[in-house]
Amino acid sequence: MKKKFLPPTYFIVSLIIIFIFNFLIPTYEIIPNYYNYSGILLIIIGIVLNIWSDQLFKKSETTVKPFKKSNNLVIKGPYIISRNPMYLGFVIIALGLAIFFRDVLPFIIPLILFIILDNLFIKEEEEMLVNTFGKDYKDYKKKVGKWL
Image 1 (tube, helix red, strand yellow):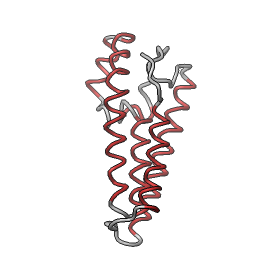
Image 2 (cartoon, one colour; image 1 turned 45 degrees about the vertical axis):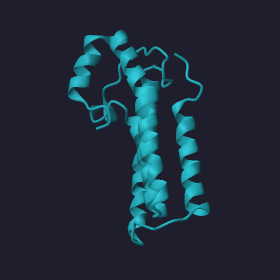
Image 3 (cartoon, helix red, strand yellow; image 1 turned 90 degrees about the horizontal axis):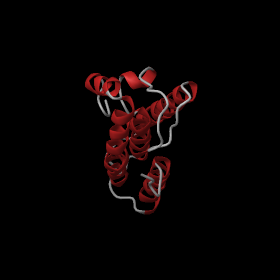
């Protein structure tokens, strides 16, 4: 199945909305000053998860594009703690940015991004992976959580 927008589009739109909420519609700051810098750590973690995961796919010569048939099952690196570390990285980056900005309204966006990724992409991708890799993927699903 071909989706009109791919996950990075939803991610970038999410970041733009967080910026808009923070700068154009400020509401109530919920993170105390200086604690907001912990958001930078989350942003870095999310970026590392995405780059690391992408590199593993390239080394395995398989696609990162949703709904394209995978050549190889990648189950090492960050894939030992999450079946979807790239999507997890997107959500962590959005959460880190919301924490950094401290305002309450941007915190809605990581949750919405999580729901979109889970419902529009992960469910169908996992069905494809079961069809492609069968028992190997089913065994992997039993050992590793969808998000964590």
